[in-house]
Image (cartoon, rainbow, N blue to C red; front, side, top):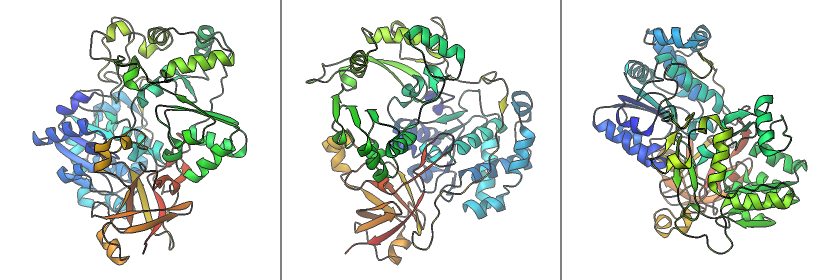
Length: 527
């Protein structure tokens, strides 16, 4: 997030896209609803009528996968009507003429044809966002999990820069992270092309710094992403895999492909707190400690690093992840000899400039620090890009609309989009072991519009078969007008109906994230 969670209380307007916020980030969702009650305006861009849409001043119910077209349409109106922040554009950005040229083609009439968004609603939303004093954009994986996910994010940034809604309180571009500590994992180098703090492996000076600290020679070639690993394993180019706190058998697109890839490995290790579906395929399972059984830090969605202290000892043979990694490393021939989490944090302070001032000693005395925090006296950074962007001027990166990788045809005549529900989390590894949550949401459902249901003779709770070009599953139907016609929605929490058997593994060319949010399927009622 460029801004902070507390600022949701003070915004004049929210633009929420690709995020079912009240369901998946309920504390932030509650702040949005409370601000709405106090008079803030709300724009929701979502194909489904999620809870926030019921409170929205404008709900842009776009066709699945048309986010770039809608966002370009908003900018078309803003520029055509002279509503953009000319001072911010002139002093803080570059590339405006290129942006103006591209978005000029996305008139409200064109956007209606591409995205199904009514002209009047698009124009109203554009004016509301541009004319607000303090407007916050929040988005989540409904934006990123497309083959155009990178383009979607760039276009959101274009919109924020165009209107000057950056670098000030209660503004900004605020991605809401989807898993616990995913921000911290990325910050610490859990990406194939960077070391900690997003320091590029291709940078010789950065590489030399880590080589000296670790006493090794490091490659300047980025590694593979998760999706690339699976393809390499299937081809036989990747022989072994070490999976930590992840369940790709349920969470990755085209699950049959994933299962075949994992089976092709010569050696699979899974390190987790429960025996997940992926762990059941492993040659070795290493039992890890849960959050309550270890001391360390977490970094949340607003870049805030917070301490967590061990409350109880790990059961049985379970150990904290860092201890397991050190032990495996030593057995493999590299003497990784951290003694405590404190030792690890001291190394992070020394090697990661954005975390340099975030020490255990400071964290013990406060409710966390937000990076970048450059030294022991630095207070942390609540708002990014206040006076300038990291690179100097912010560059407009205009993008054209591209359709879904897989569009409906006569046989596969529906679009399936996926997401989450309030009572379950990710692949259910933890929540499905919680009786109250399982009581509230014990099985998978597929949402279908009432008109489609009547046409196909499907009633509420009927057992249906859902099929794509990659496989089929059976689950129960939920007849609801939350979804528009010819769109189906389901979740990936349930191993009994693994929705990712169906999803399309087509990747965004930059991020390598699959298009979970749109694939062609067919549905039929089972006797």
